[in-house]
Length: 274
Image (tube, rainbow, N blue to C red; front, side, top):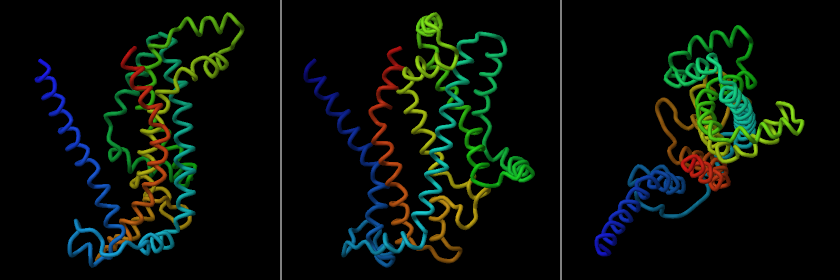
């Protein structure tokens, strides 16, 4: 039995290593290409650069107006994520605690909204938002909140059902109103799932290209994904600068993910245990 267990562990370890290499290899290939000249990329994309230089990063930083674009991406991503967390957590809490027929119907509506592709509502959405004069950054944040709340409400709903209602009843007896009960009692219990929902939405909003290209594709308002498209022309592609720009865009989201990793694991394990 011990020998069989060792063999199984060895197979699982080898499988995990192979899968890790497969998942990490595109990122390593991107970083490796970002230090190479365009000629070196065309000759052999897998080879190491003949000379490590940060010239690609310097040129990409200047040509894509990195700092203004970074500020635009940060403002849009942070505001959208915070509003999604607030609105979806409050909505899920109300849907769970107020057990009425309308609550079940609304939850089914939010759940079914996950099945509708963005492309189906893309043109009507742009037409309506244009008439409302919301083809700008506030309008983009509003649209992200609308699209992100459905999945977030479903995730919060499943977690809040496992939160003991007795805690909220005790807070009510102690004199807490609805808002105090939610923000002082419920929210601290949702830190794990909030981190998970935040990472999911941050990665989606940060990397999104299609919706910003329809709404804020103007100079001075563009996000980092829109600026990286600058290096992909109709007849030529600057792969050396594009890979450097993409590597720069990855740094903030990697830092955010690593900082929230512990909370994500806690949220997943807590949900599984309950």
